[in-house]
Length: 311
Image (cartoon, rainbow, N blue to C red):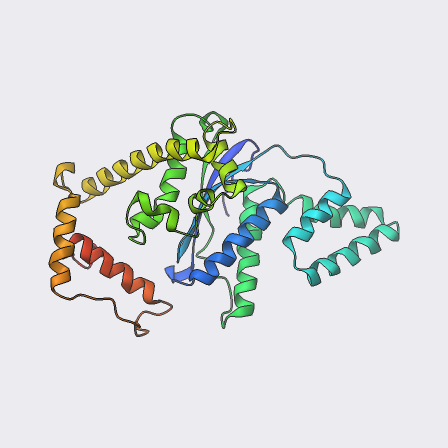
């Protein structure tokens, strides 16, 4: 029997889900579609997105669940319209009007409740997000079945961690650092270039993304310039902690980790060997793409020779 997960209001949830078989299904187009759906599901569910990062084979989402509220019928329908496509919403609206017009109160309340039960709930939020994206993906691609590897992973932060120096701030930093750790962008200064993350959205002025970081940093209505400076501190702290953790896993003292100077030497040495990215990668890796090999080459350039297990 599955363990019942905690779903309480006034909590921050770090949600992680991986693509089945760790396949790299989420190319640039699919990541853009996922980000759009993520925002729509959040609006329907009544949750606050604090931070997110969509990678090629997994996603990280940090959300805040507020207290549930009483909604009018018009407010529920407005949320449904945000989530569902025009044709599907029209079907649901006809059923809604039919049950309401016939005076079938019990049936109408059950139908209405089927939507309100999915609001202000982390499990229902992820279920809706993953199911809708899978259906959309399968309609557009030659794919059947679920896209996702089992249930999602969740870490819960209680109210006292919101706005305090620690858990939520660091979790948001870890999420934002994913493209750096994967070698997709070159360091913290280039994070704003990764289009499928909340940090990029905030940097280009998206109000929703900025509001998410503002809530992380105590919700005082700060401008993005101040929030970015605060978050830079969290990013640096998280990066140092991750580097120390990786050094410990390899049995290396922190000072023996490759320095930036050494990384530049490795890059120059490999450049002399004329190691270039191919124009097209043969389909040797099932469900893979050019980005896989590109990322491997970036790792080799940055770190020099690496064992297969390290790659």
